[in-house]
Image 1 (cartoon, rainbow, N blue to C red):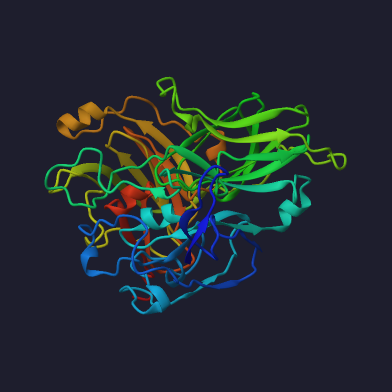
Image 2: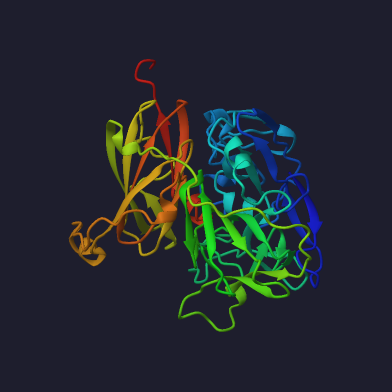
Length: 479
């Protein structure tokens, strides 16, 4: 992890960034299923942060300003290699946090072939470290996809989508305070959300990509802090989704629009064969009330200008994989967990999981090998992408309730029947959208490791303050 300069756009001066191996985004790590990997994460960053650090949260005034710890998002690994927020370390490992003091992380890669990503996870400054550039893609490959006649290298491309705001000199802009600070608001102070005014793909602002008139596979990651995207193609061509967070779906889903929240991944095939000599824009639907001057409705351009090197024999498959339902398992526990919003002593939004802060005692202690249902009850006014470490889970359903009635007397009054998962949500997930005024139920088996992990909202501004909680997988036979 080092500081360096990189041009984000032809017309901008180089931007000072933080990156893994001096790259933004970091190198794409590409490995085979079952190929165990050891990675040494080295912090070689300056002592002063690139962005404004709010030291009023999580006792940060008493900790080094620049701390890092890397989390491989979606990985199945031991707690010591998971990137626990308090397992941070400073430059040259001179100072370390109170948990799991190691630099070399072990990744077994024994899980399903899929698209993961790695990013910083340091306590209280994740939003800043990721925004500075500490993120990259991690691909696990399996024999199944090699046997499938789908587009592969060089017609398989990772697309890491982020939003950023830059100053006139090319430097990164990130707000030092919320939009409406009070007289006693700390300076710097955390903001409850941040939306950049430019869209980047693979480290470039509004790039173009030249393609042949044939099928391509795109592994798409939303690595933005706050922003969700409604993806569609300006040509009206469909997006054929074949995978999500945890690998292949049961069947290919043909869609005109795909929603992707922060930290989610979608694996799609796009057929450019009918668009020779045309340009197609991957767009972001901002909705009917969008500001006409908002340029974030465009993400990148595909220019179908390259000659077809050879006939395209790849296919868009119908059947992809078998995903056994966890509903057949014995359910050890059902947990009702509320997403709530309060105000802190400075009047700032404080978003919590089940009305508990990070430092409160652990309340979620699933037993090793047990299956649990977590009912995520969102009583805030907006959606939250919820991520659970260690496990891949399945979405059971969502059910709407009367939020106004809840705010009046605390009772849940359902306004609809449970809605089953959308077709592209029927695979394995590690991050799920929990909409406002709905109960989102997920089911998961907590294995194969015991120890402390975390679950949190993946809007990074929420995660940092204080929408993250530890949980502990316990072995009842070995306490």
